[in-house]
Image (cartoon, rainbow, N blue to C red; front, side, top):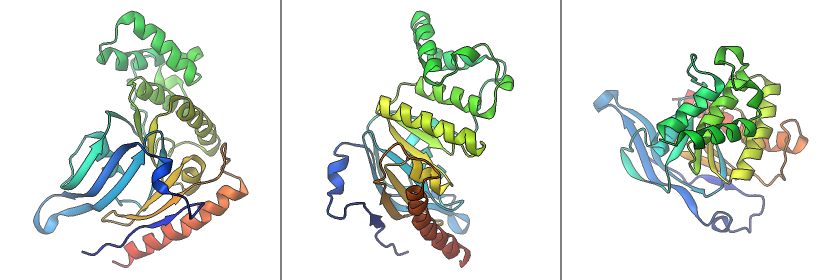
Length: 269
């Protein structure tokens, strides 16, 4: 099995890529993941090397089945690489596409439970829950249960619960994929504000190329299975960005062309 070096596209070709993020939070070196054995084995990832700097917002793109979620699971510690080395500087928090809230608990109760499991004292929990609900603009809905909330509100609760873990690394697996365009756009603004104020390292999986350009400091494209780093783009568009802006659309079009090539390659096999 042969591999080629990933294409790396930077706004300033003379820039030193190591200078922007001098302190890595996540480092993968030649990481492979194989499920099963023998002829039935599935090679999900093949020799993936990737470094994510502290405070960086990295978006992962790729065709369905290319190993994006597998990669997040490895970083989260939910699974182990078959080959290669993986270094993570601190315990990550993983946020899924589905909010997965407890339906019998209120908004406050869902966030409070996460703190309780961390054995945070009750007095501290009350103040922390208030702070988190303010952060995601849900203080007025604290007594509501999940079925009384919109999809966007449920994802805000899930985000507050993820932030309650107080980790430096946030892993997000298509958290806004099921939401309508307007709700997603609003949550983009809120997530970007949270990221800029908390300085967390974020790895965000998406199928939406414009979403990746809208949010990411860097966009990483995985090849069709087995997943490899096929290309990277450092996004130099000033923040805040808009999904419908011409400059975002132009960058997204370039990345989409490369993604389509990967999808066609997979279809040829």
